Length: 434
Image (cartoon, rainbow, N blue to C red; front, side, top):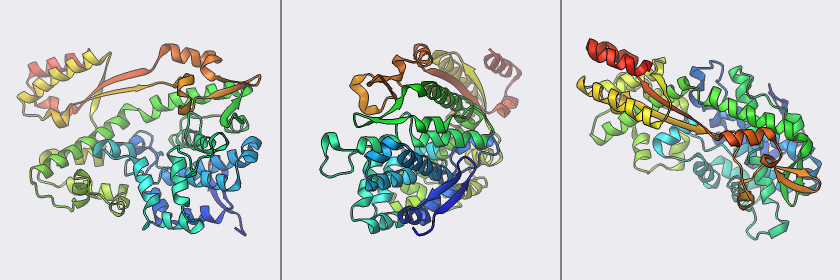
């Protein structure tokens, strides 16, 4: 473009756009829709400033990718200008297929944002497809292939093909996506867990044997990044109050599905929900779905005649969330669930909607052997040899020796205890406090 376009950004100062294709993509209605989808779902009910969108995150991923592509000499000198542009488009558009409340939405309706991203980019009726194809016929397919970690060429050049480098910049264990969301989510939640040395990490990027690697001298910065990511998951993304909010959303739509199957007549148009359930959703339908749309539905659900749906909807809208207890293991979780379920049934409280078992497991770093290099391990260059970081770092070795952390929680509405007899209430209180 004749004029450099910029977006003010709290992390990078400016997000810089110099290519007309990128500027046009940002203006498309499919990309603008991301303004209406929060980046981290229900976390805002815990961290009240976490209102940032997938739009701002996507611009951030683009900016981090741009810096890697043009400020890292190995990358800049290896990739062609067209390959850089494909990578920038992939960075910008990688999340365009997210639905409202993102991962919770996917879990409820068995959708996949990566599949929807592919459909949106390849659908000839979308603006984003038309912009990509106006640059070059078949360009949308090239961008999709990089997002999907495939070769962007119809005839792969084998050892001389750069698609692995391009894909790794967008999606790997140390990529532009993670480098942005850790910082952006930490900034917007007011936490310090996600602080990383971005400049140091970008400066450490190398290309060795046609793949992304990192300078050995950056090992401590990478260790810090891995620990930051681990803490962000447990302190922010997996915060039990945020999980409670998302559980209520999930249970609410479980009730909606059950009511649809029972022939219940809703007071609001739920035709799109029916299409999702029946696997009849078109790309045009999907793009109508954003968080204002889903909140509009839930506001109407609050006034439905069905008491369970109305109650769950009011809980969701007004942050009347379930309480939770933490269990030591799966057996304890199942035992306590069964005991509470038996008591709930005595009082005609439907445990399908008012009891929930949740198990989460997460590790800070996924170790890969040579048999699994296609999954993009973090490789350090040591004396002209590539070595998996877990082989060198005492920190990563320690993380691996401990293994993944697993959390077992039982969620329930504390208000129902008032309906129980003194004997049952005492029993439940003993279970919840043990």
